[in-house]
Image (cartoon, rainbow, N blue to C red; front, side):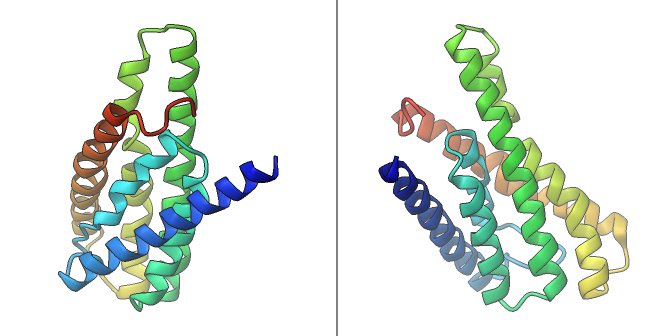
Length: 175
C-alpha cells in the first residue's frame, strides 16, 4: 500500500514537472499565454485517461507554470481550475473505457476519442473570462474562438497523438 502511494506521488510530480517544462518551451516561443495559446503541455491532459495521478499532476503543473511564467493571479487560480476540471472528466472517461474493456464492450475504442474533450471544453469556457478579467481582453467572442482553437490543437491533436502513442506502446498496461 505504501508503494502505491509513493508511485502515485512520483507519477503526479513527474507529470507536474513535465507540464512546467513544456509550458516554458511554449512560453519561450511566445505560445503559452495571451488570447492565442498553444501550450504543448496541454497535450498531457489526456494522461488522466490512463492514470489518476495525472489529475493532481496536471493541476499542480498548471498552477506552477502559470505562477512561474508571471501570469495574473486570476489566471493562476482559474486557469489551473480549468485544467483540474478537464483532468477529472478525462479520468472519468478513461475509467468508463477500462470498465467497457473488461466487459468486452465495443465502445472501448470510441471512448478514447472523447478524452481530449473535457480539457478543451473547460478551457474554452473558463479561459476567455480569465482573459477578460485578468488581462482586459474585452472581445469575448475573440477569446472563445481562439482559446478553443488553441485547445483543439494542444489537447485534441497533440493530445490524441500522445494518447495513441501511449496506447500503442502499452505504457499503462493493467491500469
